[in-house]
Length: 332
Image 1: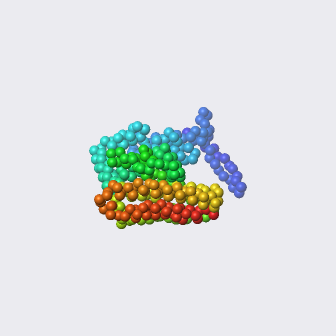
Image 2: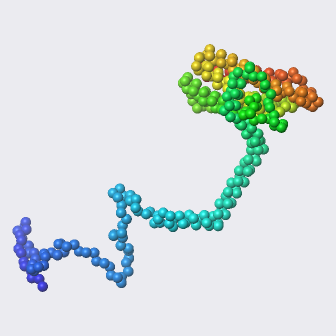
Image 3: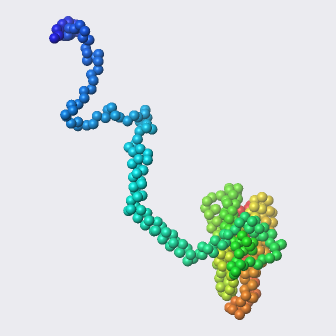
C-alpha cells in the first residue's frame, strides 16, 4: 500500500499546482513502467485471432526495397514442385496429343508450300545452278574477262545429264550473277556516296532498273525462240545466267571509272563489252545453232539458220548498251 505526498509547485501564473507522488518503498524502483519496457502479451490460447501476426516473420529486405537474394519468390525450391509441374505438363496425354497435332499441321503446311513452289520453280533444278565451289568461281571470272584463249566451249554431259558447274566451267550458273548483282548495288551506293548523291530511293531505283532489264532481256529471248520454233536445251535459268553475267562487266567498268576517271571508265567499258560479247556468242552458239544438226527433220529445221544467228548476235550486241545505260551515271 502506497502513501502519497503532496508537493506545492507554482507555475507561471503563480497559481499553486498540487502533484501527488507515490511514496518510494525501499527495494522497489521508481516508475517501473519507464525503467523496463512492457513485454508484448501473448494472445489467449482459447481466443481465435482475427489477423495473423507477421511482425516477427517478415522477409528481410535491403535499403532499396528489393528482395534479398535468399528470398524465395516462387515458394518452390529449384528442382522441386516447379520443375515437377513442367514434367507433368509434358507427361500429360492431352498436351502430348496437342504437340503432335501441331507438328503434323506444320509438316502439312511445309509440304503445301514446297508443292506450290515446285509448280513454278523446280527446286532440284535450281540447286544445280548453285552447285559451285571457289575453284569454279575463279575460273569462270577469268573466262568472263579473258575469253579469247578458251578453246573448248561445249557443255559436258554424263548420262544425258549436264555436269554441275563445279565440274564443268562451261556450265551456266546463278551464283556468280547473284553475287555480282549484290556487289553492283553496293558499288553503286559507294559511287553515289562519293558524289554526294546517295539516298535510299536512288539506290532502290538503280537496283530495280538493273533487275528489270534482265527480266526484259530474258522475256525477249524466250519470245524470239518461240516465234522461230527453235528447239534447244536452253532453259529459263540458262538465259537468266547468261544475261546476269553482264553484272561482272558492270562492276569492272564502275571500278575503272572510280579509280581512273572517265578515261578509265571508257577503256574498262570497251574491254568488258568485247569480252562479254565474245563469251555470249561462243556460249549460245553451242546451244542455239547446234539444234539444226540435232533435229534435221523436226520443226526446228524449218527455221532459217540465219535468223538463229541473228538472235545470237543481237543478244551479244545488246550487252554493251545495257552496261553503258546502267553505269554511265555513276562516273563523273
